Length: 144
Image 1 (tube, one colour):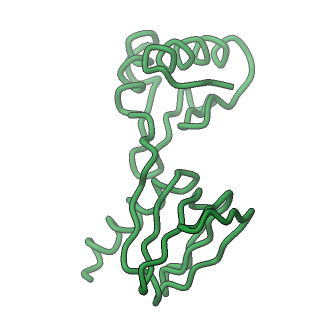
Image 2 (cartoon, one colour):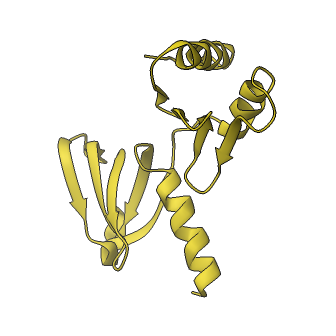
């Protein structure tokens, strides 16, 4: 794999960390669970809250990369670019950054927004949280 393709691949793989995936193994076995981590050299995976095709559940499963046929995301994430556009309507130009490679929005370099929520304190963070909550509610997603 070329350096650019490899970089793009791992960027995409990092984007599904903490998302539900399905893993198909040699021999027909499957696992569904939350992708917690992976080993870049072998593409071995660690899933949490996993279930196999026989209905067995596991708090944590480690799957060797050489046994994987394929895997794919089964839980859709939120579109942070759309959320970035919404936040940009409220704050002055230049105060909001979308770091696409990290899937993070920064507001005034103080407030961090990810798919998991808003990190920060104070009035700016509260305003961003209001925008985040409204955005999520419009899409039928839960917020914490």
